[in-house]
Amino acid sequence: MALLPTEPLQIVEPLPLAHGRNDLRRSLVGLSRDDLKQVMVEAGLEPFRARQVWQWIYWHGVTDFGLMTNIAKKTQLRLAELFVIDRPGIVTEQRSVDGTRKWLLRFADGNEAETVNIPEEDRGSVCVSSQVGCTLTCSFCHTGTQPLVRNLSPAEIVGQLMVARDSYGEWPTPTADAQRMLSNIVMMGMGEPLYNFDNVVTALKIVMDDQGIALSRRRITLSTSGVVPMIPKVGEALDVNLAVSLHAVSDDVRDTLVPINKKWPIAELLRTCADYPGARNSRRITFEYAMLKGINDSDADARELVRLLTPIHAKVNLIPFNPWPGAPYECSSNNRIHRFAEIVNDGGLSAPVRTPRGRDIFAACGQLKSASLRGRREKVVTPA
Image (tube, rainbow, N blue to C red; front, side):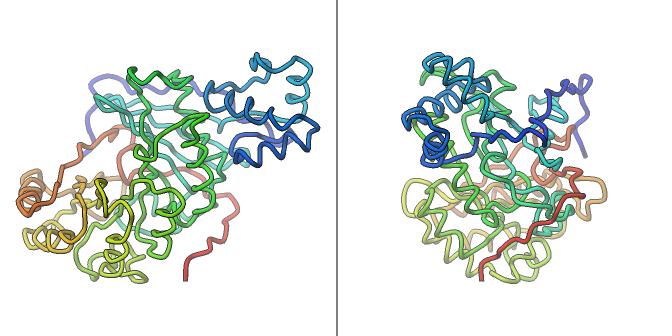
């Protein structure tokens, strides 16, 4: 059941949408550092301008070349003639009674995706989308009911964090002793990140670059439904925290909940997770487990979960199911969830129960869905 708001839901007036389709200027957001340098050279500008522009975009968060005070006016005008520093357009910004914010963002081609910030006492986690829609059809996930439209570009992925920073006024990055409202990124929004691997890697490397946003890899978590061949590549390219949408302890149940399991079953998935770099040091792999009444929440399921994950340096995130209109499941009762958690904790695994956030604005885990059904559907290359 959704939370009952204690005050009227806030819907913030949207900002202007991104530059129009007739604007032929190139956006500089989403380019790698090397690509940005090449673009500067091709424009007849000195290569060192790339470092200056990079810092203004990702450290200061400016969108106006005229504010780049260490760049000569003539060069500013040349940059403005050829380029833009844009953001996804905000269609709506919603604010939950619990502080969660959700943005429906529109990109230059008219397609849309959702982004969420979940504030905690000591941090804020921006839940970022990697695709418009999703190629997977997880039966408990609202996003899974929306067909894949296309992958998001590096600019569109990075742009989601930049919109969130604009909303909170968090430019430039606060000093080390200041509290950051946007301290973490979780790639847990719309889409399967590992089916948009190259763009996700480019975007997260931009986010981690120490001359810009400078977010530590320890503060970034990438979630996957279990694209087994790509998991080692995440460790090699990014070495960020890994989260796996497990949700069941037997293949017959997981085949229904997470159909990708038919291709890469639980045993194969867990073998790959055990070899992930984070599983061999102080960082634990997080296994997400949505609590579904009568489906995966028995005492036997909890004991089997302990057996499966004990060989891995792991923790379990127990997620009370977040209902959406037409959902085929119900959330387990509070007593059942806490009994399940007790068994897993007694088995030696950390199993916190996630507090549902943003339910009143459908911003909770598994609830994201946009209206982008009209765009060109991209072919997604899936691992063999």
